[in-house]
Amino acid sequence: MTRFFIQRSAAFLTLLTLSSFSSAALGQDSDLRKELQELRSQNSSLQDQVKKQAAMLESMNLRLDQLSSASSNSVQVIHSPVVPDVETHEQGVRSFFNGHVNLSGEAGLGLFYTHPGGLYPKSEFRVDEARLFIDAKVFDDIYFFTELNLTTREATTETFELGEIYVDFENPLTLFGEDHLLNLRVGRFDIPFGQEYLTRDAIDNPLILHSLADFWGVDEGVELYGSAWKLSYALAVQNGGQPLLHDYTNDKSVTVKVGYDPVKWLKLSASAMRTGALSVVGDELSELWFGGGFIRNLSPLSTTFHAEVVQGDVQFLFPRNQLKLAGGYLRSWETDTLSKNSRGSFYYSVEDVQKITTRFYGAARFSQILADKSGVPIVGTGNFGNYFFNNANLTEDIWRLSLGLGYHWNKNLLLKSEYSYEARNLTGDRSRHTHFMGGEMAVGF
Image 1: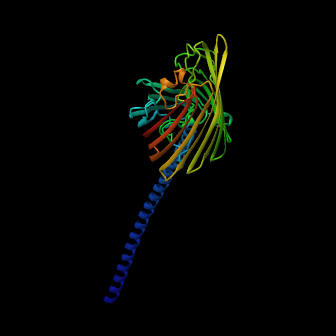
Image 2 (image 1 turned 180 degrees about the vertical axis):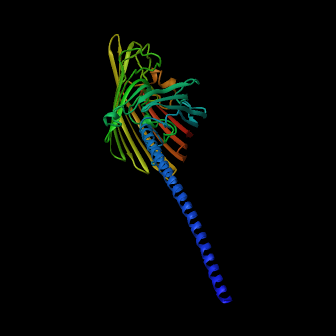
Image 3 (image 1 turned 180 degrees about the horizontal axis):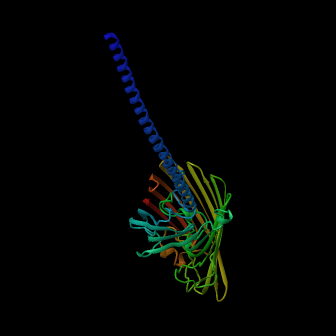
């Protein structure tokens, strides 16, 4: 009996224990199911948030791509021709950041010397040039650009001068599926003649001096420009005369340039320009710069004068070597009360820039002007008063050989030196020569 009682008691205790474990297990299973359900709910919520964030990021990336595309269509930067890994464009130093105003600039600081009779007979330390550029996005593809010349090599006073100031209407044909084909520029801007004016700034020029012809100028007017396939063009109508505030004749300056880039390393262009009739009393000088001076009248009886010029450019732009050839013909006319006189001049230049190392380069340029036998005013590196305004020192023939070395610290800092020899023949079988030596530090930001 006692054994039976013990056996029953043991069985009862065993069942009770098993029942307790079963109840505990069922309770734990219920808790686990609740926790699993909560985790699934949280995971689902997190997945929804991740999808929303991914959609937002995709939308933001699309907007950034659109803004970058619009900005890249407007960015036009000129860099030194001896740095082949930097993209080169035609229209000037520009950078737009999503519609904000952008300030940039460049300067050249140097030591120049010419022997007596030249421009720098006293071994001058010079602020060769200093410019500030301001850009702003007005609306979509409409941009405003202005240039303030703090000083330039050609300046005769120490006051600030206005350089370029214009509004660009870029890609107005985009709505019709055409990009870059037509752009409109209105204001005061570079005369789009030839190729050398694009690299006149100290930070872009591999040498210190320029070619003898050195065509350039800034004038008020309108310009159409664009590109399609491998062709580019520019058509500008401008005042023609030097005064900034007024034009003194109805006849306007017209410039046409057509470019063709058949391959990446070859650039061809042809330019033609007519200055328009300029008033001796009002305009006085052309806006076009030639031979270190301007186009001007020579006869004291002249009432109007004008010039016409054509030029061809060929550029071979290899990674380690760049060869640039240019040549053309200029003819000027003067009209007085008795007759109409004209004088012609042939000119050409050859420039070669050879990379020695990644940063170090050598440069050489030879240029010449074969003027009319009756002579024309050409300054070169001579004294401005002697060779531009003095009709007794008109030049028949002049040539210049320039040799230089340069070092690119980086794309914004250039150190360079140059030696040039210039020889000229004046009317009356007289000859003159000028030596130039200089060193310059060019900076940009």
